[in-house]
Length: 113
Length: 109
Image (cartoon, rainbow over all chains, first blue to last red; front, side, top):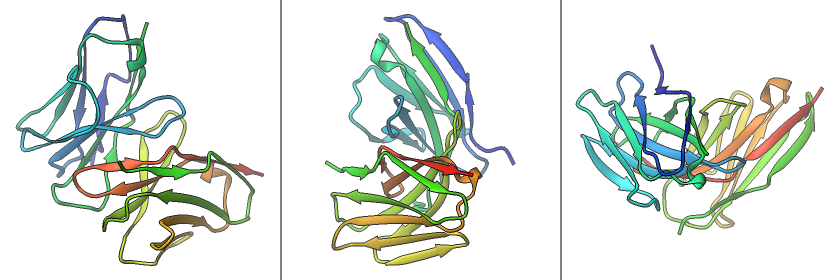
C-alpha cells in the first residue's frame, strides 16, 4: 500500500518564476494538507483541501494556491517566487473528520535562486 | 494565535530514558500529537492524545498531558540510536494542525 507520494523530490527555480508541486494521498484518504518547512523550523500550515475545495488556509499570501482533483490528488502552485519561498514542502493526507493524525510524504525540496 | 513551543536539543545515552517537553498557549479541547522526522524524510506520526486524557502509553512511548500548565511530554524508554531524530509536538484536529519548532534528539552510543 503506497503512502503519500510527492513529486518532484527536488526543484530549483529562479526568482519570479512559477512552480507546481504534486501530491498523491495515501490510499483511502480523501483530504490533503500542505505545509511549508523552512530549514530548522517546524512545518507551517499552508492550506487543506477536501472535496476539491480549500477548507482551511494558513497565513500565506495569494501567491500560494492549490487544487484537488476528483481522485483526491492535489497540486500546490506558487507564483512570483521569492528567495524566501525556498523550503521543504510537505503534503499530508488524512480522512475527513478524522483527528487521528496525518500521513506525510517525504516532501519536495524547493530552492529559489 | 496558536503557539506550540519546544526546547531545541536533547542529548541522552543509549539505554537511558528521554523526555521531550512541549508547551502550548491555546487551551481549547483538541488533539495533541507527537511526530518524528528523520533526515531527508517527512514526518511520521508516533502517537496522539485527546485533551481530556492525562496519559497514554504505547510500547516504549509514554505521553503525559498537564492541562493546567498546558504542558505535554513524550517519554521514550530504553532510548536507542535509531531514535535519533527531530521530534515535533503538534496541536489541532482534522482541519488544521499547528506544529512546534522541533526538538533534536541525539542518542550517544
